[in-house]
Image (cartoon, rainbow, N blue to C red; front, side, top):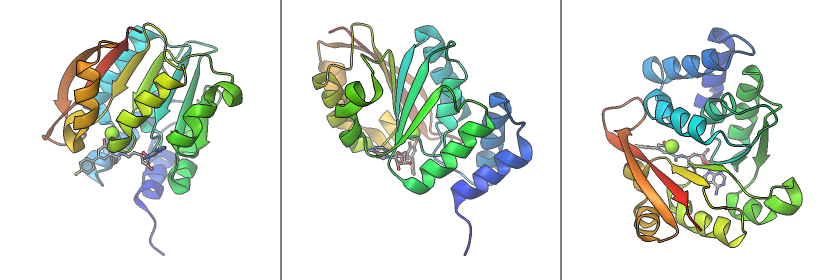
Length: 214
Ligand SMILES: C[C@H](C[C@H]1O[C@@H](n2cnc3c(N)ncnc32)[C@H](O)[C@@H]1O)NC(=O)c1cc(-c2ccc(F)cc2)cc(O)c1O
Ligand SMILES: [Mg+2]
């Protein structure tokens, strides 16, 4: 049977990227998505905004919802300080299997804990199962109608602290209107919109950066 797009993306990484070199993995995926097949990675343009926020926060404990093929996982993990950890949740088993291999090709498997499962099931278990106290940085990139319920769940589970930075992808395209309405009007967050473009296209999209103020 025909291969899947994530499988072809992984082949492109194995063919064009150097083992242990995260930047070569990132550029191999960006080249594949620009010149072969579009895919829903955060991409190079929004990726540089992601990089700058991660570098500014310098998180010891980070969370990503929606791993897909591991592109943003690699972008985040390569910037983490020694001893830091990134937990990333992906509930599609086929995507998780590809992501695991992409993360390994980049040589970042020691910093990343890829959990196959749904955010709604795993967020309540973060403390007892992963020994997480609070997250310093959170990247929301999963189903767009899960951003709002999951940020509320993260609050309820005491996983945010004063200063936790939440960065949300796709707040314009596909769009997360209920999340934006909540986070921009909540006294518990200071929010800023970083205007950009939908990965590998000219369509508008952007990232919403929100700091939890408690
Ligand atoms: C949702 C996907 C990303 C991944 O998230 C996993 N996932 C989901 N819900 C959960 C959960 N509750 N827990 C754990 N994992 C979870 C899933 O299996 C996908 O692998 N992302 C998108 O759909 C996405 C779509 C577009 C897009 C934009 C314009 C178009 F014309 C078409 C598509 C752009 C983007 O930048 C995206 O990010
Ligand atoms: Mg996205």
